[in-house]
Image (cartoon, rainbow, N blue to C red):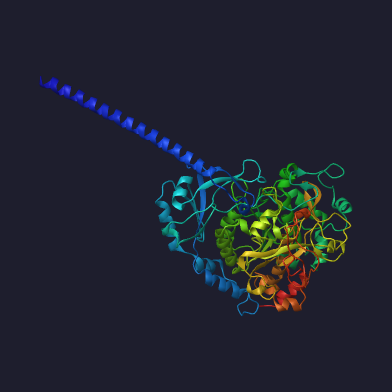
Length: 639
């Protein structure tokens, strides 16, 4: 009897456990169903919010909302840690680049610059705050402690930053290419004192807008008279294009540059100590075989190679011979940059920093990866950097503007010179070329004339474009519809960009040059028309301010090599020197006084702009320069 009672009690206990398990399972199912219903309601609410949202496409360079982002979608943000001593950093950069200062060109080491701005307390506070939110994964911290890269579901970022994320698309960005961005955000109180900004939340990529060529158009390739992409030789190209066809020998003649140093000479050995870098993005490749043809044609040494500075080992960085033959539009900018920076200074060490379009956001990633590595990386930065990409200032959030300025100042203090193309669409930028609501120039009516960024940065040298001297004619503004000069060949395809910044005040070195309060762009200009380039094994010509930018970079590398050989520091930031009275007295510049930048590329639309005048102007800056006179000025200044 006692045993039976025990057995019955055990069975009853098992039944109770089964009931409890069933109840728990039912509760879990109900909870899962409720959670799913809540998620569905959330997505319905998000879609409803999207349908009620109106986005000002003008401010984003043509990017428009496609849909609300799904809350579970993962997204990477780069948090900019608030740097310390920014005012002191600026003051020091001003002093070390002032030719009148006893400290002129006394550059700092990388370690000194990093120590000056590193904010360990801010970085720690950011780590703590992010650790308190579900799903946040820290992916990377920059060497200098300036950036923290983290990934989390969209719903987490929206909760943390009081943001609403959308998927944006662009008509020129290619199929399937979208950006996940918010229209606004707010930092939590715990981070306001420690975070200077966030990248990949408000910033928008520059759409594809490379150098222009008669052989290439926005939709692909146009055939020449014989049915090919270009011409079989430089001689054939020059015969077809006329006397304005530009080549490295012509550039050396026009701008009074020395001949290429002979292999094994002391000069060549000196040049090997200099470093120069071009920046690439938007799926741009370059071709080693194209470079070989180019250099062989003009007697340029082929000993050097291009060093990949991110993602690959040294060697043929982001190179693709087959790619440049089958998709030549993917090689325009990179081929031009690599061929001409090496043509001007072939013995210098050359780097190519590439940000792939498929996994990055162009100029924003340039800020986080390129600038952080160059300024705070584990090796010395290059002495010269060339950038051929840009966006209208109105399309750039304050976070990106601030971040670039800080890193540009840090590079300045390490003796780095940065050249940036000023744009190819005149004073209105490419925003004016895109019709909105069927109207031309509406962007100008809404936003005003625009300077291109980062050419508008106070710590770079902006480069505009001219035309004329290649065919032994007077040097004037590069613009398609200029009637002040007779062209014996095809008119230029671009208009030199320039204007006044709405983001940055006029720097002291531009005081007295004009009355506007914003920083004036560009600073200098060189020929920007009919550059002979090898593309896919054939010869074509390119126009663009992105052509003279790498040319100037290579020109300055030659001066750096002489300075280093003499035991003197690199040139560094140019602007305070070239705007000085000494530069005027030595007549370093050829003043460009004819032409304007009122119209866009290919002469349309004409939304307003500025005239080239005596002295500095927002079309060609101070004018074009003599390499020899610039070299002499630099050697006569400082220690």
